[in-house]
Image (cartoon, rainbow, N blue to C red):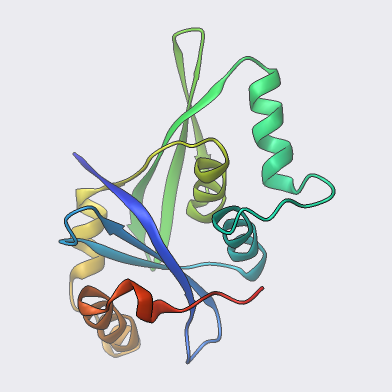
Length: 160
């Protein structure tokens, strides 16, 4: 079973200086931080802020290609968490046929935003990500606890 989630915001990890995408379900029961690359965070931030690039960016090109091939982005699903790496699947629909494409979660989310498609996370991923980890994961655990109680206005703006 999967839980529909929305991008709550983007922030910079104060320790690693890497961008973090914050996903939250509509009830606020589930919060999922996902560390991503700078370029992927910029692609997501541009779409969230409705900034139009003068030339197509990679995710825009892919969305347009999908559309020209007669398909649409139905949804994306974050399917697994293994060795601190998230996995996702892009679900396309073309003439009633379902097509699944392996994708990085950051790319899948950038495409979901461009295709106005919902974002889902498997419950097993939420369970794995909420388990206390070893000493190396203490910072993410502390961040998760803070994110569960933070007011969305406190997240601030991601700077491109």
